[in-house]
Length: 258
Length: 317
Image (cartoon, rainbow over all chains, first blue to last red; front, side, top):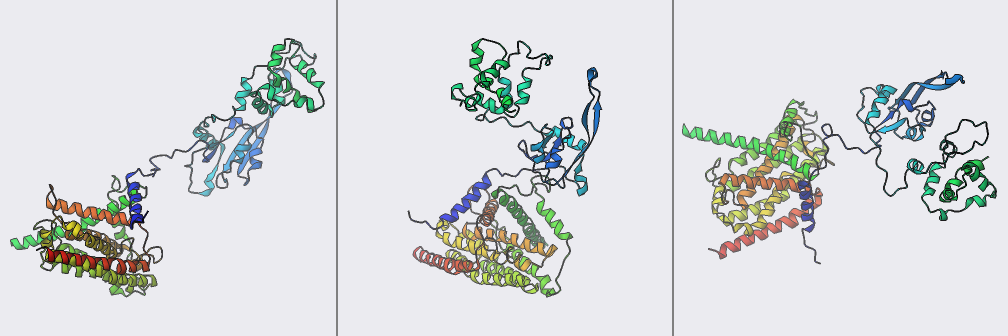
C-alpha cells in the first residue's frame, strides 16, 4: 500500500476532533464529590467499643503516629466470683502529619476497631492540628462504606462456611463431673481450633473421598475412633458419622497438639 | 457633517470589531483546546461556563506591576507592544465584510494589507532586541528569520488571487470571485493560510516564543498591560488572517441563503477554529524544519499556483 502524504497529519487532526466531540473526563471536585471505592485510604476511623487496648496498632505503626492511653478497671463479677480486670481506653490519637497511610494498624487490629474511610477533606492550616483524638476518629466511622461484595468465584467466606455447618450434637452424658455446666457444644471446638476453622471449612466443600487420610499417617490410628466416640457422644447411629467425616477429624486436631 | 458622522461610525465599528472578535476567538480557544484535551476549560468566571474568563484576565493584567528591566532599551521596549498591535487594527480597516461594508476601499488594498502585516513582526523583533535578555534576543532573531522566509510564499499566494481577479482592491477581488475559484486557487489558499500562521508565530510555528526553551522569547520580560497587548495582537492576528483568507480564497460575503456579513463571519470563525485546531494537534516545528517547510514546500507550491493561475487566465478569456 502506497503511503499517501498527509495521512499522519489528518490522523492527528481526527484524534483531537474526536476528543472534542466526546465527553471530557474532568470531575468538578468541590461541586461533585469523587466516587471513591470502598477501602480507599482516606483516613483511619476508630470504633472505640471494639478497642481492647492491646497496643498492637501502636507497636506495629512504622512511624509511631498512634498514641494510646488507658487505665485498668476492675469489674465486680456476678455471683461473687473474682473481680474481672479490663482495660479502659482514655486516649486514642493518630497524628496524620506522621501517618503514611500504610494501613498496617488496620490490618493488625484483631478486634476490628480500625477502618479505612474514604473521607479525605481534613486538611488543616497548621500541621499540629492534624493530631486527631478519638472523638474525631469516631466521627469518621460514619463515613466508612460497607465492604464490597464477595467475589462470586471466590471461596465462601470462612464465617459463612462455619455457620452453615450442621451443629454438633450435644453430648448425651457428661464426660466427667467437673464439667457440670454444659459447655456450649459449638463454642469449644471453634475456640480451640480457631485458626484452622477456615481451613476446615474450605475442605468441607470437597467430596469426602478426595481427602487425604492424614490421620492414619500420624501414627496414632488408635486415637481416631476414640476421639470421635468421645466428641460425638455415644450416638450409635452410623448415618451422621458417615456424612461428616471431616468433622470427626476436625476436633481431633487440638487433641493432637499436646 | 454627514461625512464626519459616516467616518465616525466606521471607526467605532472597526474598533468594536477589533476589541470584541479577538476576545471571542480567545474564549473559543480556551474552550476548544480544553475539550480537545478532554478537559472543561474555564468554568467559573462569569457564571456560565466561564464566559468572562478573558475579561477577568484583562482586569488581572491591568492590576499588575509594569516592570521594565534595567538593561532594557526603555523607549523601544515600551513601544514594541504598540508596534505589534496597531498594524492589525490598520489591516482591519480595509477588510470588507459585505458589499459596501468596509472601512476604506483602497485601490491597492491587497498591497497595503501585505505591507502593513509585515510591520507586526517588527514589534516582536523590537521587543526581543530591547529586552536586554538573551532569550528575548534569540526569539527576536527567530522571528526575523521566520518573517524573511514566510513573507515570500504569503505574497506569492496573494498575488495569484490578484492576478485571477485582475485587481488589487479587496472588495474588487470578492466581487470577481466565482465558486470555481475554490478548486482553482486551493493550493494558493493553503499556502497563504499556512504562511500566515507562521507570520503570526502561532503553534506549530511558534519557534520564536517556544515557552519551553525560550520562555516566551521576545515577551520574556513583559508584564501586565504590555504583555496583554502582545496577547491581544496574537488574537487580532488570528482574526485578520482568517478574514483575509476568507476574502481572498473563500469568496468573502458570497454564499447562499444567509446575508453577506453573516457568511463572512461564519467563514472567519471557521478558519479561526482551524487555527486553534492546528495548534492543539501538532507539535512545534524545529527551526530547521520551519525553514525547510517555507523554502522547499510553500515557495514552490506558491510558484506552481502562480503558474496555474497565469495559464488559466490566458486560456480563458
